Image (cartoon, rainbow, N blue to C red; front, side, top):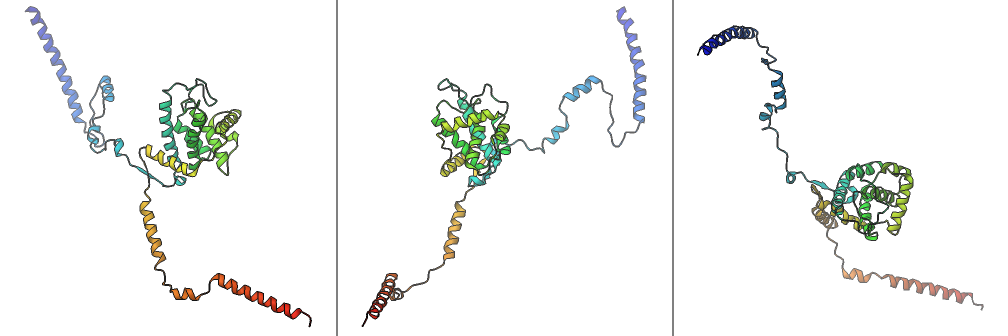
Length: 307
């Protein structure tokens, strides 16, 4: 009890000594008029400031009502592509082909080598650039058009069919793409670059590109010109398997064109059969002309005889 009595006055003294200082500080703060531009700041400890900086700002809760949530995959806008692949934008064609190749890579990477033999298209390690970025690089710097890009898809099927040891994987896709781009540009386009340009764009040596080109041509039996109907099928298949893309519907336009053509023709004039019968045919005219020629020749022969 005595200890408690001796401690209680000390506690009361400390509280009394702090109250005047706090009242003076509050009075000083109250005497300063608040600034109209900046709100009144309260002294905070460094630890409190650090904790507040780590916490999310409170203003975001009020703004979250005005910001629309991220749309799901099904709500994405669908881009309409031209019905003819020649008019398809190169950027969209690259995306379509890259999506298809990525699906092939995911399937083939899980399968073992068919013959256990590496081809010339195999790399030691996967390159550090994605298929989409690599295709964009080739299309931009090698000036690849949509027909050339679709021809590269045709080369995938032809090479895999005639060369069973080859498959599209992370180790073969980059060397195949630069080889297919070089062959398509030089074989199907009127204007193309030299092998030095294609090698620099593809990131390989000129000698290596030459060997890849010869090996590719030998494997496909030097047949590199695809059928135009096949390119149309490839284009439609790529659009069908790629989400967010559709081909424009031209059926209504064709019906309108047919109606316009029928209206432009109008009603055909009535032709009487009597007029047709009265006009001599070509054979009759030719026979009459030949008879006249023969008669003239006969008369000339009689006049030329001596009396």
